[in-house]
Amino acid sequence: MRAQTGLADTPAGNAPRRILPSTIYRFVLSTSGLHQVLLVTLSVVVFLIEVVPLELQRRIVNDLVKNRPYRSVVALCLLYAAIALGHGGTKLVLNIYRGWVGERVTRALRLRIAALLARYGPLVPTVETDGVGISLVISEVEPIGGFVGGSISEPILQAGVLASVIAYIIHVEPLMAAAALALFVPQLVFVPLLQSAINRRSAARVWMLRRLSIGLVEHRDHAREHAGKGGSLIDRVFQLDMGIFRFKFSMNFLMNFCNHLQIVSALLLGGWFVLTDQLEIGGVIAVISGIHRLNDPWGDLVNYFRDVSGTEVKLRLLESAID
Image 1 (cartoon, rainbow, N blue to C red):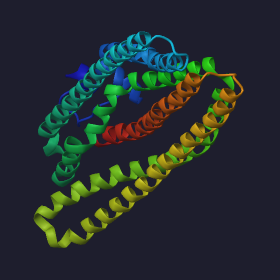
Image 2 (cartoon, one colour):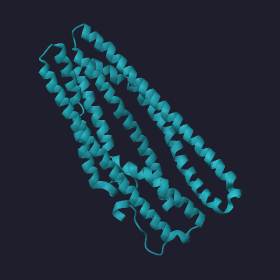
Image 3 (cartoon, rainbow, N blue to C red):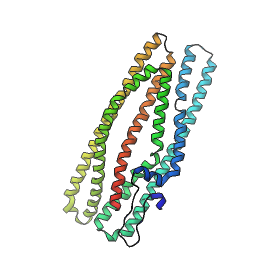
Image 4 (tube, helix red, strand yellow):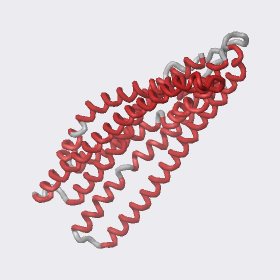
């Protein structure tokens, strides 16, 4: 069990103390090192295939415009369908595998904490043990275990998709690529600021929910006496949740708006290049499709770094509770 959870026992007879790895990535490697290697391999396969459909789209459109034999278009479409099937199937395997790795770690953590509660529960106040224990087993370990599944493969996959698509757009038309990438600059300013605000509220929310769990155990015997206190905590959790929603969806709105501006720049420049015979229409379609492909991995990377900082906080809170 120790190899699965990254927790180390103290000698019998001492107060319960479990030492977690110093960083979230050490925890990941201690609980799923070999699986991470396989997940990274699948991720590399997925992002290497990513630009193939873009090139096939460009060739299909250009073949139609140039009045080439229709059988070549049919052949390219069949190849496109086969590539899409292989790409989607590989991604399906990757996602299921990630989920299995994450749930495996979550299960191991829950079993370990339940064993700790059974073993050391009488040594600490009952209300504190029950309240924190409920919060840990039911909710707090789940995001930590869930993060483990994609902790290494997710940034490699999304960064790989970004790099491959950007390289393809530059290959098709460097000026259109430069204009699209320039519109990423505002996101480098507002995304870290908004994400920092979300992280602070997420950490406070975990602490509030833990105190609420303790309060629920207290209410079992003193419901009327502590009802006001519990209601206040619930209100504060509600306020934190609404703050997280406001920052999160505002960030999504700004990111989507920047993506639409990238499309506008591609249409303006691409339209001019087509009118002046500097670029074929298939190239414009490929660049616009590529810009669309940039939005999802960029958003996923933002979500990933949000999860990294948030999970690091949750791991430290878990460690303090176990201590």
